[in-house]
Length: 333
Figure 1 (cartoon, rainbow, N blue to C red):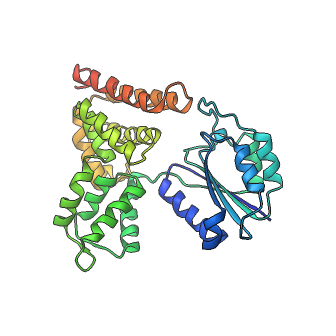
Figure 2 (figure 1 turned 120 degrees about the vertical axis):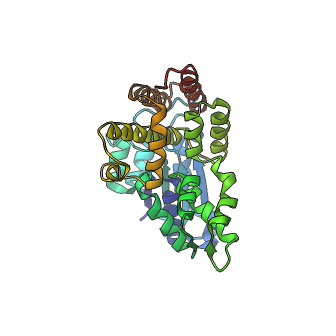
Figure 3 (figure 1 turned 30 degrees about the vertical axis):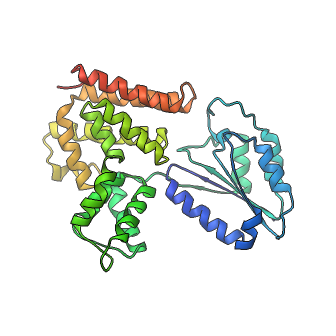
């Protein structure tokens, strides 16, 4: 019997790990040489994927197909010239080719479970979700990845890695692998980390937040473009900015109520370093202006997800809008 997998969520690193697990389990190295196909459903009709899935494997018994960005699983797919024959996919879901493993990768926060195609996939396929990691899980993930890479981190290195990678596990692992190349007896000193991570800090998600807070439009746009080159999704970056500004707003409210940073840890489940940064940043904003920023981010997120505006343009306009107001003093106490 043929197999179908649906991997969805914002955490690309975990999705990639699961995909590789499936690849190794379902096909041999020889079969992958001739019978491993990949498609991008943003520019390829799903019926072409189905046609490939139904074609017999070449020089092997099994074949594997990975189809990314199934936009038809979204509640409001972005506008596209590609039309998908969903009925063709529904037919295949109910009678998959016995020699094919089909993997659908949906790098979205949510899929529309009300749609018939998603209901059928939940019945007939193996559906797994991979949510983005949260700020309070970052330290745990650094520890886990360091163990996987057999690295011993000096005190303070963990915070530097977190500041560099933010909540992006792909970047986090890449940074640790880079540190490992320079490790002596697998030990990473603070000096080595500071030297090697300094260039990455300028292109991290947290540096994008810093650029916005510091009213530096040029830095914000260049950092954003660098993150795009690192394959960061504009929607994911909106979520990162929103999470940071929400935390700043939370810290501000708790400070006004007389809470100390120590007491805040019981209410805001975040890494101490991130909490400390939020405490420094909140002084630059009134609560009203933080609400304004969060509303602007939410509106931009909606524009992107509903296809009302091209993602990269929407993000740059959002940066301009927030920073231009900030420079006019509208967002400062």
